[in-house]
Image 1 (cartoon, one colour):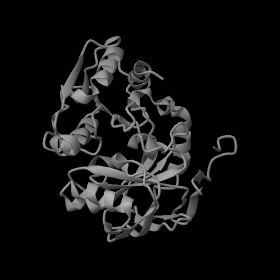
Image 2: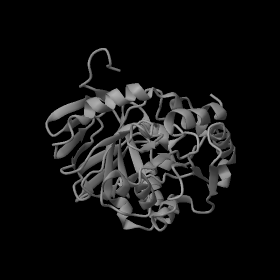
Image 3: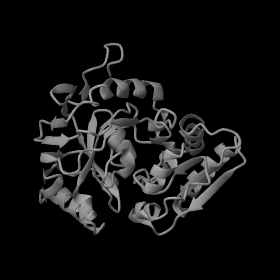
Length: 328
């Protein structure tokens, strides 16, 4: 798929831009080709398209928009098409509360290709919505999640009083807020994570793990990371934030995109892949939590048995609660 086709999917199907709406594309000089494609697709619909270029902010872009809560007040639709996600920032929370639409479209890749050219953007939004709805029925009155895998994950997360949601790219389905990451998510109670998490998928922006990494959590925080090559890479990545709040587990997610693969080339694709789950760390304010931090990152793993309270909703990474004709 070429970049322009991906841009058209984003503008037409995901944010559903309408005439006279004011669109802001937040990006950086690194992604000029993607920004140009988005502007071209949007320009066929609205004459009110602006670009905000961010430079040299890298992983601290979230802090920038936490300090500028009113940054999006003048626009109807905002696309965060920069290196890092903006979705957990105060500016996004304010925009959505004012009935604006925000799409998180982090463009970070490691293979030299544009994320807008990846096939996972072809996700069937209607199918993913059905998958999400079947799972979300189990969350409203639940108090905990348990995750187990054959590699040794045995983790408990508290979710009492927290509202689960889903992303499938389409802002309308997300009540104004969505992400290119196709998933069911819940902002977990920030002091609740207990147990062992064996990371065997990808480490967000740092790519695939070379070998599984055992991570011990207690009181909601990472207490110990296995001292192997991938574990040392993860510790170094976290230390760069210089913020102890980035050790706090703040989100649980389940990938729902059957077009996506966890290949380590694009963290948004990795955490979207059907058959994976992820634990998010750091800021979760816009997701419905109370944890602030300088950023947010996700650690992706495979093939879990997942229980919401005592109800199994996934077995070995397969959704167990769908009708046979929908089953993947």
